[in-house]
Length: 151
View (cartoon, rainbow, N blue to C red):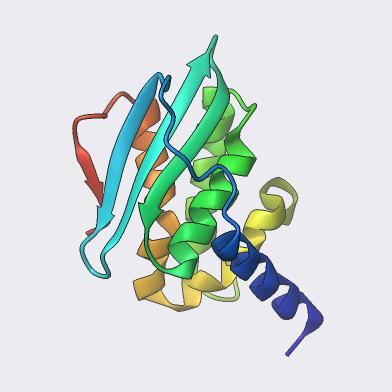
């Protein structure tokens, strides 16, 4: 196994075992709930947006290592970004996990999120990796009452 693949596996496992920003947020300006009926992953995303900037973000939920790691990495990567930057990062991330295996990855803008690049080779896992991201997008777009599903 290559050193890079091992590093990525370690990063995913680290975020699963010690998730960052996994907590409810009492003073969130928006929230949304997501559910993957295929495997049972559930996530709630809490956002505090101030003057167009994501001042704080957190999540709660249960699910597989990919789902939980992706949510943890997402919170670290969107905190401090403008809403527009977070939406653009969602598009780049979604493109990475849904691309044809072997296609180029925009490593520069993804950083540690590239650890989830291999998900594209496992179609059933794409939904696990993207659930928190779709839920965040729903929260940013004011779709708090809808439950996001990855069907």
